[in-house]
Amino acid sequence: MSNRLDQLISHALDGRRSVHQFRQRRCVDPIDAVRVRVGPRELVNFCSNDYLGLAARYRDIVFSRTGYGAGASGLICGYTSEHAQAETELARWKGTESSILLPSGYQANLAAVQTLHAISEASGRGIRFIVDRLVHASLIDAIRQVEGWVGKSMTRVFPHNDVAKVRRLLEQADPNDTQVVVTESIFSMDGDAGDLENIAQLKSQYDFILLVDEAHATGLYGPDGAGLVAQLRLHEHVDVTITTLSKALGLVGGAVCGKQSLIESVINFGRAYIYSTSTPPLFASATRDAIQICRQEPNRRKRVLSLSRQVRSDLQEGGIDLFPGDSPIIPVLFHEESRAMEAARQLEDQGLLVLPVRPPTVPRGTSRLRITLSCEHSDSQVDQLIRAVLRIVSGLRSRTR
Image (cartoon, rainbow, N blue to C red; front, top):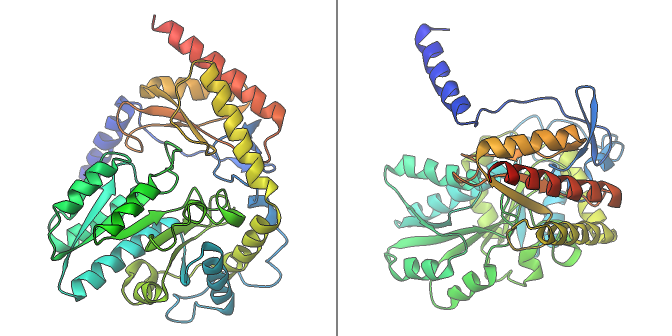
């Protein structure tokens, strides 16, 4: 390694350490749906996105009927009957004409944005993305990539859920540009819902494409867990739906859902799809199992949403301010990075794994504990969490008085 590279690395990482933003990995080995082993210690896991406790359900389901690797991209020889059946079932579940599987939710967002840019460009039109400031990093990265290709900014950011600002931006839009409004149904860090109904109402007055990332709503909301778009009956208003298989469905991968013509466009213009090896067939196959479980076992989502309401209520009664909502993503803000890290350390000392989330993942001044719940958490585990969080927050507040 060159001296110059050593210096660049040292400077960059030292900067992260100085503001309590240095990240490190450690092995977290699952014991069951909600217990993990970290080194010699057994902890109750309150930071996984496995909301329905399905991640451990597939150990013996699909390995015997399909292979591990796809072997090539979907346009070469990596598209199997397992992929086709999974995409058909996923589209039927989500209430769309078609869908397409990708290796991750990140790549699904990348492919969707690349496709929208390409088809707009092919028509000789510019494109502008009107983006909620709290959307996932994968959407921001996708738009920045497209901006890099074009060499100019094509983004306007609106304050979180500020539909009035969206309206003003649409009123000011260049009629020669394609307008794309980008939001989420359940936001991954704040755990609240996007104002989908009021954004959808704007479609009666303005011409725009609506892209909704349903990563953290899929499996939890709507008929058979199909998502918040389905619960609100907004299928006709949402043009592009992104979902992941790695949250409530307990698998890995992502998907773009929409009209057949949109999916054909992703196949032809979505570079993240074209130049990636396909999702392993075993995960495509397991997608159908996951959807079946969501249909047949509704008590899983009822249980986790009930736990969420309980935790939110108890924490608020204890004096902790929370964002509105009922999702199993419950952030407890500490503002300063060091306090969030100290709170996480104290929870771990009590046998609870809750990780601190710090900038740049969240805006500066909003460092937090990001609590996530599973339907598999027992009442006693949840009670232990609530008591511990209230005690730790009270202790950290008293130090500053």
